[in-house]
Length: 242
Length: 236
Image 1 (cartoon, each protein chain N blue to C red):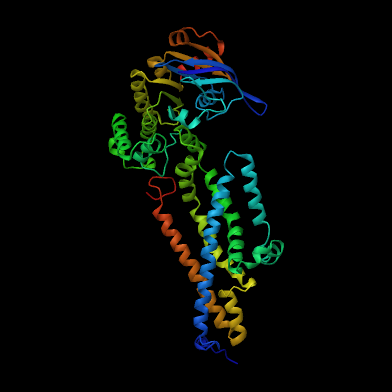
Image 2: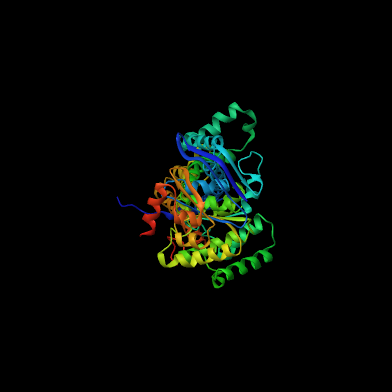
């Protein structure tokens, strides 16, 4: 579903991604972790071309993201994305947040879009909030709306960029529960997160990045059992003992 | 010698079959017309130019930057004379264009440079993630501006836009320089003809103030109407 091959990226002379290669197969959940500044978010944003890259190739569902002729809006509409800071559109109601893409990108009818939006709000437990505005919801609720907004486009796969790191601790689980449910339904997911409980529960593989490199790309059991690199071991011992 | 008010001056005949009051009202109409037309030009051009300065295209950004620098680095009065004297002699067809249009363009473009900067600041004050979220759902860049960035950016810039709208009314006074019969032109001529400068200028001042204040109220109405529920800085 997602194939990342030898991707390198520079900001000026500073290299933020170094020859990164990995893949996410259909129905797989892959967790990407690593210290801040290691390039995790940059890598995941290369998948839907929010970040351009200078070398290598990213292929999503058979389409090369970096190729000059690629219809990026079309490709992006099939890749759901959830951001650290939710990024709901503050001037639109919750329902309008959910219907905007359906109407403007997928050209669905107004009523069909609202029906779909309502079903998804129900699913994330926020049916009653449809008429409210993002600023009137808690962080956890906003992030659940953001997940529903991405799902409204019927994506082939979902990207999560630290979806819980801007949340108060008591709200993390309500978001993780939605993500776990999604994983169990067979959604293809690439998640940048430090929630190792989530990784243990649903991830097939864990990727560890450091200084722009993929240092470790292992199955979940291998990663938590015996990470090969010293950096990954140190990182794990730090975040698990907190 | 004690000063005597002589407000009856406004009822005097100008010699052309109308009173000075009639003349002042029609001059006020010219002020409003020049201001309103310039405002439309300024908001349209300013929005486009300000938006272009935030797009990823480098050469469009430079073009917009050049626009802003061109129109804000030259005094307004000089710009009006350039539109009136210089450009028509370089480009003959413009000699047919009424000076009203030239003034509207001069004042509109001058103000557009300032509005462009405000619009740019409004767009740039939005979190980077808003643009990314719009693009990530498959909106084109144009759609992302239309549905995501500009609706918020315009709400943010309503306060400076209010000042700018009031400025346009006051700046329209320079139109007297190219013989538009607006309020300032009226004041200068009426005081010369009647020697009642004090009454004339006080009346004109009152009209300018009332007009600018009315604009302020209209903008405040829109600001309240467009307030986003729950958004930081709004009341509820």
